[in-house]
Amino acid sequence: MGRPPTCRLELNVIDLRHFQHGNLPESFRQLLIDIHDDAYADAMDDPFNQRFPWFVDHWSGMEGFTCVVAYDGDEPTGFAYGGPLTPGREWWRSTDYEPNNGYTSTYAVSELMVRPHWRKKGVSERLHEALLKERTEDLAVLLVDVTHPKVQALYESWGYTKVGEQRPFADAPLLAVMIKDLRS
Image (cartoon, rainbow, N blue to C red; front, side, top):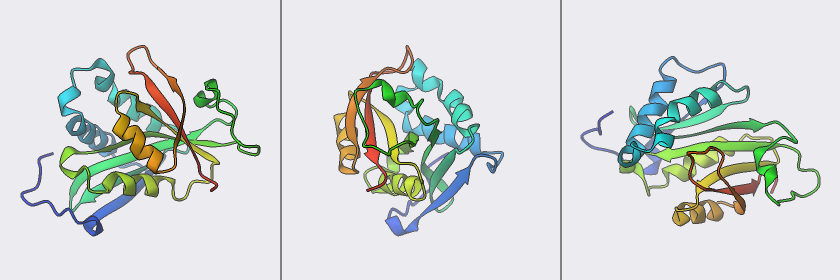
């Protein structure tokens, strides 16, 4: 997945394509892995990053899985994906956060990544907005590495609030649990 000779970076040329469980092209898995490998090229010696294909298989196999992939021409630039969590059994409930009454459903934003050449150009925000635009759940939840305060601040600017910290896997970094009200 080399970089095209000239990259058009105006946001109006970024094309967003939507995918969902049960309607994924055969090349979908490898597409996400290739973007991930480029986005994390300097950290692929980390065993947790090496397990990314497992996460793709896990999430894309879930009923309700949705994904948005950004393209600059034919070049994939990034993606965001996730899926609804089982009401009452959401993993974020291990925090002290108490949602407002009537909030019973959660959409988990599992991954949001943009390849290095396209970062800091608004692509991640467009991906995030497109992923959540049609969601009917009450809340969105995501995890952010606590050693990346700028990423956490970005999500806060998009309406998320940190409600706790978790290490969901033994080899995972400590992650901030962030929640956003989708009803407002």
